[in-house]
Each structure stands twice: as C-alpha cells, then as structure tokens.
Length: 380
Length: 144
Ligand SMILES: [Zn+2]
Image (cartoon, rainbow over all chains, first blue to last red; front, side, top):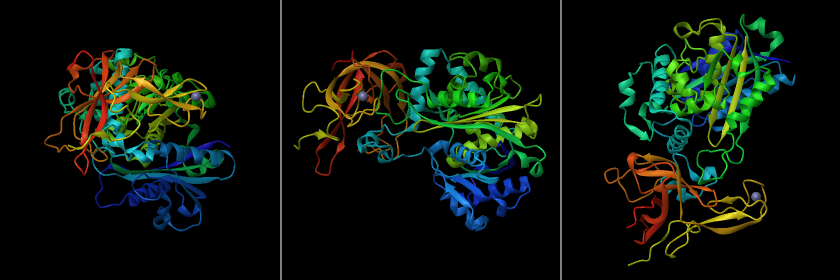
C-alpha cells in the first residue's frame, strides 16, 4: 500500500518563551490534524521525537488519551527522518491506515554541549576541547575546499541564499536577508565558517498526518505521496563527527548510501527532482550534500552557486524556506520541517517562495551525528 | 614539586622523550585505531594489540577553535585568559588520521599537507597541584 501525506502542521521555529517544547509539538500536531480535517481520535499510531523538549509520547496529555500506539524516536538530527520512516513502514506493511508523525524541541542557546560518555568516548576528549560539532564541520569543509576547489565566495553565496529565502518564509526564524558584506565580515567561529554560516539550536514543532494512499483524497484535495523513506548509518571510513581517529581510506558518507538507495527504491534519478531540501547545519554541509546526494559532481557546486542554480528560480531550488540556517535547528522537528516544506512546494502553497513550473517531485535529506542520514522522495 | 602525569593513561608514552602516540592494530585485518580499542571498527574482530603510532605526520585538515568551549572543556583558563587553539587531523605513517589540538592558532600558520610533530602540553593542575598532560601537534619546522 502506498503512503500519502495529507496533513501538514508547524509551530514556527525560533523562540517561543511562553510555550514548552511539548506545547509547541502539540500545536504542530493540532495544525496537521486540522489541515487533514481529522480528529486525534482517528490516529491509530504516532511516532514522535524530541532531544531536549520532553518525551514525545507525553503529547497525549495535551492531545487526548486515546490509547493509540505511540513510539518515541531518538536518532539525533535524523529523529524526524527516522520517525517518518517508521510511519512509512507501518502503513506500507498494511498494519495501519492513518497516523501522526511529530517532532519538536526546545534547546538552550549556543552550541550543543555533548557529553563524551554518551558517544563512547573518555572524558579527556571533551576536557581537552575536541568535543565540538562546529570543529568537525569546519574541518570537513576545509578539506573539501582543498580537494575540490570550492572558494570562500561559494560559502558566502549559500548563506546569502538561506537568509534571502528565510525572508520569504512566514514561519522562518531569521526573516531578514543579509548582505554579502554582513556575511563576509561576521565573526569567525571555526575556520573557514563564521557566525552567519552556522545554524543555531532553536525551538519549534512540526507534524505530518500520513495515511494509506487509497484514502488520501477523502482527507485532502492534494495529497503528497511518500515514494520512499530511507535511513542509513555510517560505514567504516566515513569522515564523521567526534572521531578521535579516522581510517586511511575515506569511505562514502551515509548520505551517499541513503541517497542511492532512495533513488533506486523510488525509481527516479537526481535529474527528476524539481525541488530539494538538503541538510544545511552550516553552509559547507549544503555544498557537500549537493554532490553527496548525486545532484552534481564534486567541485561543480562552485559553478552551480555562481549561476544561481539552487535559488528558488534556479534549475534545482535547494532549501526554499531558508533551511536550517534561517530556521534554526530544533533537532526533533528539523527533519520534518524539510518534508513539510517540500509538501508545501508540491501543493503549490509556497506563496512568495513558491517554485515556478508546477514542481512534481521533491527530495529531502537530513544528516546528523554520529553519521546518520535520512532521505525521502515525495511526489504529487 | 609534584610530578606531572597524563590526564588520561594510554594515549601516549610517558615520560619517554620523545613521546609517541599509542594506538591499536587489528591482528586479523591490519587496521589501526586511536585510542587503542578492544575490538576492530573495520572487521568486528577482537584480536587487537597495542602499537606505537609514532610522533609525526602531515596535516590532513584543520580548523581553529576561536571561542572558549563550554563544559566538558576543563582547563585552568578563564574567558579572559583563553587562547584560541587549532584542531586538526594528522595523517600518520600508517595512514591513520588522528584528531588533535594544534599549537598553531592562526589561519596563515596552517596548511593542509604541512609536516607536524607531537608534543606534550599541560591541560590543568589537579587538586593536589600536579600538572595533567595531554598531547597536541605543532608545525615540525618550529623546533624549540
Ligand atoms: Zn580488523
């Protein structure tokens, strides 16, 4: 049985001091239920996740104690992708007809401070100053720029695009476009990446109602079909965060393996994708993920960005809502925001940021520590 | 004067001069790891032996930590005395790339491929006043 998305809900990303993380998740869930025109009592299952906002299954205290199967998902930055994958499997298998996927979060300001023991590392690693994701991102793009001739200008172009798209997105956190000079001269965080090249931890919630494809039209006039949902973890040799050592040979990242599997399962190729969401925890990630997901050759990003190929008006619009850079990253909700945005674009409801030409097929990609990636392919 | 000691045992030889990094090698598939592991990331085997990984290599990639990290960072520094530090991966003779603090902390001092050597630095003093040591790499030309 094919799987459709018939309800989209979001609680705006950014900061909502008056609401807990759970309340933001509940608001997103209610919005998705309203969009699909169904009651929470009709939900047969739910998959939900949050890193710092509380247990997702506590949402039933706000939404109603209906006795449904509610499973908490914790998979780092890929929590949303993994929740959607689980829901996809639940419907695909024929076990369930309709359910809720929800993610939310509420993080403290500033960089995430990870604990070495949670990652199988000893305390010295953190105490001596190596336990920072920002360092990894800086080092990965530094090597990539060296190997593939990517310039600093291209890094700036990605940030410029993100905040410009954010300025067109009512639910975005950063809604002010930034000038080239503002981005170029921002304080350095972790060479070669500066303040405006990183996304920040944030708050927000996002939810989707998924159902059997054969009942989709009863619920929404424009269902979006989830062609495939794939999650992969790292192989030996993949260059990942929090690694005291890396093997000699650099292996393909989990993004490459997830992407290849997704294209194969969906029976489409990168050339068929009309609009994409690629994980942009920082600008280097978006650049590398363009090639790792098969949309261009390594090094071609230099030309693509200069030509504006990934702008809303370009041949492959990427991160049309401003991505993580403009929306921040509430970890539990972030992967679902990507799917939400692609559904908005495929429905033609993107307003000022709508991709022209009636997009038919969309793509989402999430990537996170310690080397996990989720890819979804969606179609009208 | 209390004797200085490694912050964490088993990462580098001490008090050998010059010190070397200690890692492990899989006796089944030959792959190296740092720090030494009891099982192999490549083949899942458990036939591991500790090996001397040497004390020199080339810079594979780098960045600079420009602000003082939050906990679990633990040194005697304050936000006022904090000095930015480099972070990089050093490609060793065996091919393994080891992540390390770098003495160099300015972009114009660091270049991919440059030769690097191991040195031992003080992280902080413990409650009794003994210096706790860790490793870092620095440019190999800068002999002091
Ligand atoms: Zn082995």
